[in-house]
Structures are given as C-alpha cells and as structure tokens.
Image (cartoon, rainbow, N blue to C red):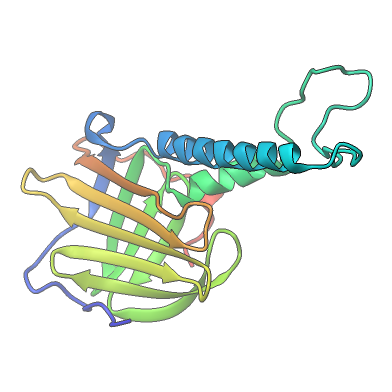
Length: 210
C-alpha cells in the first residue's frame, strides 16, 4: 500500500462547515436496509432448503429468537444487542447531516460529524481503532484532488473515505466498504453545501479529539 501525499499539488481548501444536500446524495440507511434485506432473503432460502432436506424423524432446531411460550406468534422488537449493532453500522457509514473540516496546522485536519470527531495528519501511516474495536492500519493524505482516509484491518474490513471540492463549490464525500465486513459492497456518495451562516455549537458528547 503506497502512502498518500502530505499536500496536494495545487492548493485545495476543504475547511468549512458543510450541510448535506439530501436531494442529490445517496441515502446510506436505505442502502444498508437493501443490503440487509438481500442477506435475509438469502438466509431464508438456505433455511428452507435445509428444512426440505431434513429427514421427517429429525426435530427442527430450536429458534433462540422465538417468542416465549404463551405469546403465540407475537414477536418482540429488536433485542438490545441488535439495536446497538444497527446503531454501530450507521455510525460506520457516517450518517450525518453536517460535516465540519478544520485545518489545525500544516497537513493536520479535524473532521467532525454528528457521529464522531477525528484528527488526522496528511501523509501519515498510523494504527487506529475501527468502530467495531479492531486495530486497523490507517493511511491519510492526498491522491490528486482527493483527500483520502483509508483504514484496513488485516483479513478484516476496509474503509475508504474520499473528500474533494467540486467545480460548483460543493464538498463531495465518498465512502466505500470492502473486505470482511457486514458493510462490504456498500458505496455511498454525498454532496455537502457550504454553510454561510453562523456555525452551531459543537456537540460535547463527542469528547475531545484524539
């Protein structure tokens, strides 16, 4: 893996407070729902084939997610771990209506969204923690007109984020997931407009930047 450049060949200023233009952006939640629906359909087909091939004298496996006795066919809502897992996936997809980029000094940037805050150094190769806890190699820097944040876990997930200014002055943001991950295959493209009014106060729940 080649390291990215510490500076662009031509001056590019990504700093600013950016607001999502939802009319021209992908919906990551819809993309996640579509992927999960396809996975569930595939699982159901496999389960039906297994049931059809099971000998008549063999009882079916126990359904650990079945409702308790006496509740009939009524199903409960998502279990706490399932809800937490879904929230974590949305965090990994960077679902945020705003994006703030600050250049702290030469090549060092703060990237702040509604779900996380990061400080990254262009031209660096470090190790960071992924949202699911794995230790990942991280490469940050410029690839032509794109500012790139890449994270890769050995034999695990790979996240590739790319930022650039469009000819219309918008911020284009691309996110791609691959490797061994529930999000593998998801590609999200979003466009942000520069906010012209006062910037809202930061969210204290994010804590200090690393």
